[in-house]
Length: 255
Ligand SMILES: [Zn+2]
Image (tube, rainbow, N blue to C red):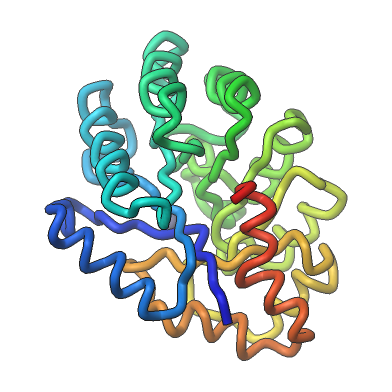
């Protein structure tokens, strides 16, 4: 079965940054049957608030991964919204405006509803590129001021209906996150992160339909076969599996 992985970290805390190592990572993904992957920057290497210089280092690495991948990789540009409009615009123009990176990645610099997200959303709208927002249940967690709960990411998507948003981490979003995502056509949930939970993929398909769930692994933080098995082992139709593993991401990323 053909697979597109919408959530990978080829370089993680500085590991695999050498071109020879990156090539090895790509070979391994191809061996697994992957036909395309999204590469996300090493966003937490310098903590949750990288400065302008640190952001440039991480995004330059993504640009080189895209070049090594020769069409196999879509690279996303990591941004810290708290650096302000000028810094965000400069980095998006440099990385996305040149056409090398084709998406924006938001981690835990600020909550998805922070006013400083405006620069990010305007840039995404202008360049017509998707956003991947790290998301995890924050109901019992005091980090919500900078860590997005599924309710926050879904509210962001409703506020900006012309921007395509990937809400990361199905396990972290849970059933409450799936329900929050109902009726938001510009938002998909990726299945990356956390251990598979019985019934969760099935619930996502039942509540959202089979077009708004996309396969992701979070590799190498998570195990690739387990991430794929979460989809292949779920009690959904083979058509839905094909949609989640490949077709939805191909449409969403406009490959
Ligand atoms: Zn991730």
